Image (tube, rainbow, N blue to C red):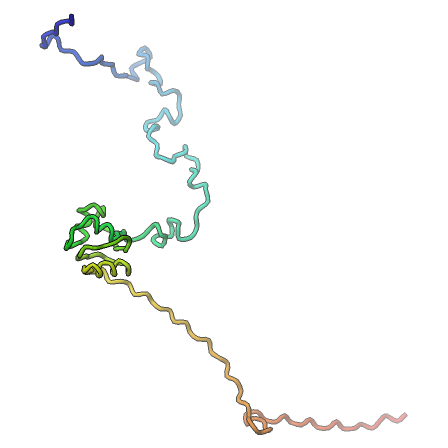
Length: 212
């Protein structure tokens, strides 16, 4: 038969599991944790905060991510925001609008955040044309691609841009000057007027031969 349960009162209270005494260090040489308090002799691990090092820390030496070669071009961090992975816009496709919004909805940056398509309203939004769109929507975004505009207007919707698109500057290259050719006189053997005839050289005078 199971033992009868004891009546719960102040004299029978006890913890559900055995309590373990906390480690009290630095309480003298006879305490069992005196002198070095379980940290050993000097070194990095004997200091406070030595077990909470940041990821990638290699004890002060040059870490591996700095010893490796750097990737040049628009993919490096120094090329921001030129690189394709570092942009000033976040993209949303028309298929996402088809999946989340109802027909006739008014879509703004705030509603995109409410539906979970954006994290916040700090970055410009560009609508892209991936997927199909069958619902009539009123969209207000910062930028839109040509394919996305075609699909929105084909479904009967409208698009309003919150930021004017940047006009690309056309560089005009200066034409190289062509050297003017001298006009040729047709049907005449005379030399052009601007060129004077070469002067005839005087005949060399004959010198008397030396008498032998």
